[in-house]
Image 1 (cartoon, rainbow, N blue to C red):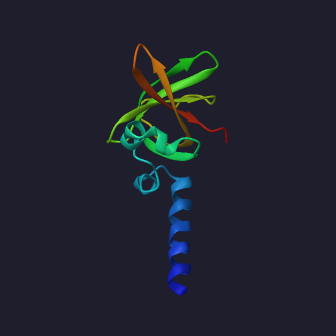
Image 2: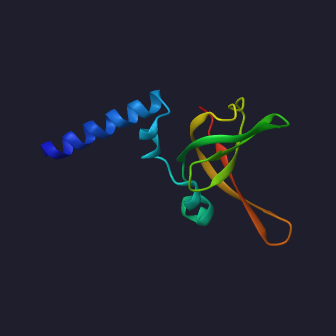
Length: 115
């Protein structure tokens, strides 16, 4: 029982530090982007966390769009908040959706959840 309590305590501390700082610890709890793109159906209807470095940033109408790369792959993120700067490390909670475009090509997009 004590081992379980200690494990929960350590997990809680790691999560708290992850929420306060965008450090490497956060990547331990983030879903790899490569897995999202390869198996988006596995994450359908689930709220998940991704993290990585912003490589592109801009806006589309009233939404912002930015691309993040976690070292395994990159994905476009749509959000209602202002877009982070290129080069910034981010941690984002949201959900995945697939968009079908041009023939049979499927594009996977990550929607950031509202805080």
